[in-house]
Image (cartoon, rainbow, N blue to C red; front, side, top):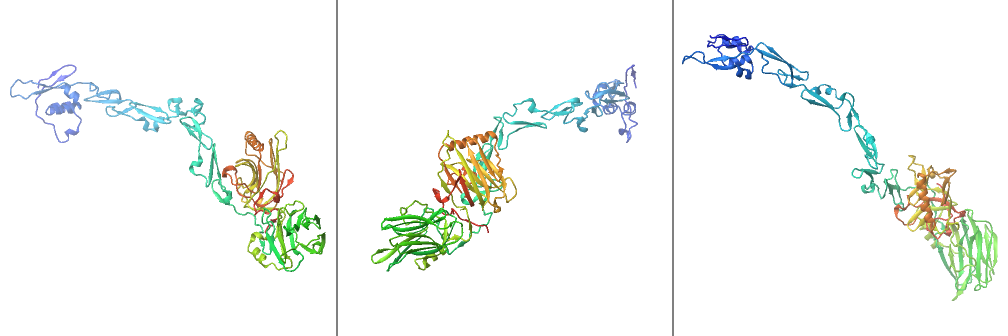
Amino acid sequence: LFPSLSPSHSVLGFQLVKRANHIFEETKQGHLERECVEEHCSREEAREVFENLPETVTHLQPRRLIPYPTARPLLSVKLSLNQCTPMPCHEEGYMECENLKGAFNCICKPEWKGERCEQDIDECDTRNGGCNQICINMPGSYKCSCNAGFTMVSSDKICQDVNECGLNPDLCGTAKCENTVGSYDCKCAAGYKYNISTKSCNDIDECATNICAQKCVNTQGSYTCYCDGKQGLKLAKNLKNCKKIVPCLPLNTVKNAASLYLGRFFNGVPVMEYNFKRKQKTRFTVEFDFRTYDTEGVIFHAGHQQNNTWIMLAVHNGKLQVQYKNANGVTSGVTSGGPLINDGSWHMIFVEESINSLIVKVAREAVMNINIPESLFMENRGLFKINISVGGLLSDELHVKPINSRLDACMRGWNWINEEDTLISETIKHDERLQCFSHLESGSYYPGTGFAFYNFIYSTGENGNWAVNVNLVIRPAADTGVLFALISDDKVPLSLIIMDSSSTKKADRQEIVLSIENVIVYKLEGLPLCGGEKLSIQLIATKDKIILASAAIIANSPLEKAQLTERLSTLDKYMQKSVKTYLGGIPDIPLASTPVSAFYHGCMDTRINNQIIDLDEAIYKDNSIKSHSCPSRT
C-alpha cells in the first residue's frame, strides 16, 4: 500500500484480497473503507461508494504503481468530500443540497418532490388548486383560468360572468340580447327564429310542417288553421285539428205526415197542383185547417188562365185576402177581412162558391162575401174544368194587386171539391220536405244547410259615410256558424259568427265574434248560447267605430288601438263599394276568408238598420230555411 494524502483528498493504490464480502453485504449502503479497502477495489465497488455514475467515472482512474510486468493494474480513486458536487439534484426542483458522508440529500422546493426533487407536485389535484373554474398545472407552479364568458376577478382565482349584452348593444342585431351565465342568447318573439348570419329574426312558416288538419295560413310570427264548415267541421280546442259540428240544443223537428208545408219552394212555385174535371157544372168549394206566423203569401189560386177568371186566397198583413177576376177581367177586386190568423194557431177556413158570389168563413163564421158573376169552372168540350195551385200562383201575372206569393204556412185536413185526396196524401206521407213541424214557435229557422242574401244599401249619402246597425235575437242549436256577413266578391269585409269558446275550458260556453276579413276584431266571450234561451245581439259599425254588445255586455277587442284603426280603414274601403248581405252562412269563397264558414243552425230574428227582415223578401233563400216557423225545444 502506497498512500498519498493531501488536505482535500487522498489517493489509495492497492491490490488486496477480498475478505469482507458476505451474503448480506450488497444490501448495505456503499462505504469507502469496506468497498475499496476490505474488498477487491473495482469499478463496481467504487460505484457502490459514490452511488452515481458521473462521480464514479470522474473519481475512478487506472494507475500503475507496481512496475512489474506481472503486476495487476491498480485503480486510483479520487475521493471528493462534497457529495453535492457536481449537483445531483433536479435543477428546477431543489432548494438545497445536503452533503452527507458518502451521500447527499436534496431538499425540494414546496412545489417539487422526489429523491432528487425531479417530480413536479400537481397542485390542481388538491381542491382544484383553489381555482373557481379551471386549474392549469405548470412545472413548479399552477395558475387559474376561466371558462369562455367569464373573467378573472379578485385573488386571481374567482371567475365572474361577463355581460356580453351590456358590452355590445348590437351583439344580436334586431333580436333581443339576453345575458346568461357564461354566455348570452339572441331571442326572437314567438313565431320567429334567429338568423345568426344576418343578426335578425325571420318568420317561421309553421304551415310547412303540416301543423293544421285542413287549411293553414302563415302570418308574420304566427299561423291560423281553418276547417271547412261546409263539411260540417269546426276548429278543435287546440286550434289545429278539426272536429264535427254537432247539435248542442235538441229541437223538436218531428214532422206531421198529415200536413202540407206551403213554403217548400222559395221561388214561389206551387207545392201542389190540381186539375179537376166534371161532366156537370160544379161549384168550387174547399175547407182546411191553416196555421202560420207569416204576414203575407198565397194560400191557393183557383180558376183558369185562358179566360182570365180566377180567385186567389192569400194572407196579407196577417189577415185573409181575396183577389179575383172573371168575365175576361171585366170584374176584379181585392177584399180583406176576418181576424188575424198569423198567430201560430190552427184556424179552420172554408171557401165556397155560391150563385154569383164567393163566401169565406173562418171558424164557421163568414168574414167575406164577394160578388163573382162567373163560375170558376170553365166549360171545354163538354167538361167543366178548374185548375188549382196550392202555395203559389197559377201564373205570375194573375194578380190584381202585387203580392209576395211566398208563404211559410201549414195546411191539414183539406177537402177540395168534396173529393177524397188519397194520391196527394200518400205523396206527402213519403216526403218529409212537404210536411210541417208538429210543434213550432215564431222565428226564422236555419237548419245549418244554407243561407239567404240581400242587396241592402248602407250608405247614408253624406261624405261617403255609412252605417251598419244589426239587431239579432238568436237561439242557437249548434255552437258554430255564421250569423251575418257582408260579402264583396270573394272577400268578407265583415262577419258576425258563433264560435266554440277557446278562452275557457267549459264545454257549455261559446263566443260571439266579429271579424273584418279573417281578423277577429271583437269578442263576446263565455256566453251560454246553447242553453235554450233567446239572446239579443247588437252590432253597430261605422267608418269611425264598432260596438258589439249583448245583454248590456260590451265586447272587447284583442287588437291594439293602431291595429283596430287599420282594420276599420280596411272595412271603410269595402263599404265605399257595393256589398251583399248574407244571413245564416256565406257562399263558396276561399276557406281562409273568414274564421268560420259553417252555416248557422238555430232560430234567428233579424233587424237591419231598423228594418225587420222577412226572409220571404230575400233575393235568394235556401229552400231548407223556414222564414217564419222555428221548431220548439224538446
